[in-house]
View 1: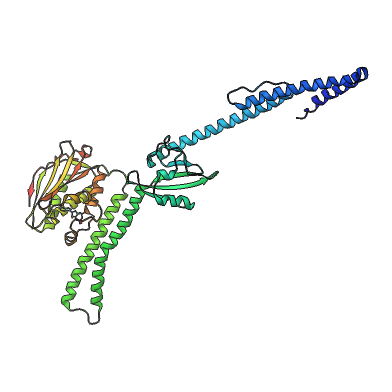
View 2 (view 1 turned 120 degrees about the horizontal axis):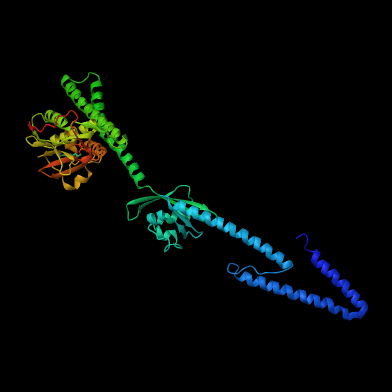
Length: 445
Ligand code: ADP
């Protein structure tokens, strides 16, 4: 810009000097010279302006026009501006691409909303969570996709400090947390996560606290009641005292087994990864289980090892004993006196092994079977309590078996008995360590 005036002022000075000289020679007719020069200059600038306006109509498609003199300087400036603009456009495009690639890889759904809450862009997780189509639904309002009236209220309230929890998304099964972040010119960034598992865990935790409190309340009330009676002035008669102590002992034992089962369950839940890979002599364990079952039954049932030709397995002896003991004790407890319990340890056709307990007990209605391994789920509450059940036995079985990649199978018919089988995969099977083969001898009580 510094030399801008030098050229034009030089031309003007030369023109005035030439016109003055001509005036002196030829009189007023000399005015024709500056008039002609100004007309030529005016035409030149008009044509430069026309070229510039023509280029401005479609700057992206046409090359910058060529010009000389001041126009050359103007076009050079424009060319510089264009270069800078293209560079920053390329930078922005790169940044946008990186942002889209990063958000596409995210598990969280990301949606960009314009100032009218219409979808501008979304990542693949958003398509999945909200069942939207990135092409079809761009331009649609988010409230058209999330149709709950509470969500509309949340949007209108403009208070996004807490996320909105959307229950029943994706056909009713999924719970989403939707966080809105306002930015720029009244645009919004929507970030959403699937919190279905978290919600279930929270629900399980709440249920567990409620159930444990409920389970502990009865024994504590009984013990507190008797203690109050025994503490009364004059005390209770010896007969009542004896009965009170007996009942308090029973209730204390109930609390003890509940706490023990809770601790076992918590140990199993906290143990990460698969169970240890120690060879376990399951045939010997099965034989010792028979003795335990007989003690529990008190000779009121016919208990037998129907088959015990299964192999050793790789795993945790404590966990396996705990699982098998629960299955055997359930069979005894839910089989009326005179009934029969058969224990089986055998090889499966796939090369794995199965521990099965078959009883002729009360059986289970089919609708209860899928829920049996839930904590504190009982079909017959009073029978479970009467026989010292905590409602945690099959939950323990489930965890212990899953540590061994084994599954629990239940077959049952009300009034006809049940068969609970723990089925182990072939990779858990191992050869006896001592070199003895598993003893096949069946035993009968
Ligand atoms: P509990 O301590 O109540 O026995 P479990 O978790 O071991 O708890 O079992 C859950 C429920 O499954 C029991 O309350 C009972 O109703 C049912 N159940 C378990 N085993 C048997 C069985 N062998 N026969 C009939 N019902 C059974």
